[in-house]
Length: 268
Image (cartoon, rainbow, N blue to C red):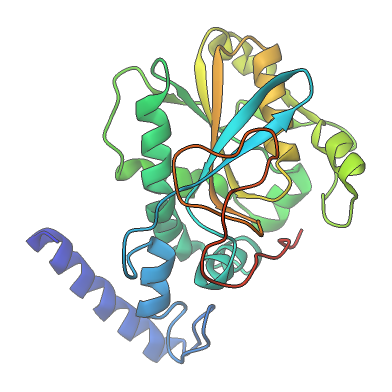
């Protein structure tokens, strides 16, 4: 850690102490008093607790198209799950920065290994969800993640290139076939069609469950002329997970179980 990072960490700790005096609370992950997120849980969200976490790699099968490779920064479990839920559903917007820190390494790797400088595109939320949250929740996380990524000349942001189409609803409670049909209600915005054509794209999502939404988003981008698409997410819901660099082909499941309880389906 550099002296600048150390000074920033001390300032952050002091700021959180002062906020705790004004607005006492508890950690969103472990319930420890006086913090929105205590230091150990914050370190776990950032991926700084213990050895540096390796990405989880999944291959998402797609009918009539090559499988989509996904790199996830962690499992949808423990402090990472709690932090993401609090950020999305409880208005804890200050957690965008640590979630971005966790996403940064996998996003940076996807940008660096793309066959050409890519555009970074976010999976869209339904308009009702955007109004409810007051933000497009992926955008602050992606921008925080990019601050820690080595720049690649020619890469760019097109975070709002995709939109949901009429009839799209929450995926929660749908069976696999219904999830695929609902997820397919994604399209490239006309205002971004020219920019997408002929470009490599890195798709970003917060959590991957079945992979239906990411696969549908990739299909929409490819129909609009994107040359190559890969995907990253903050976390992945899975039962069998392996850190590493190449997922099991065809199954759509992450390989080999890591320590910890199996992930659970995220809320709507």
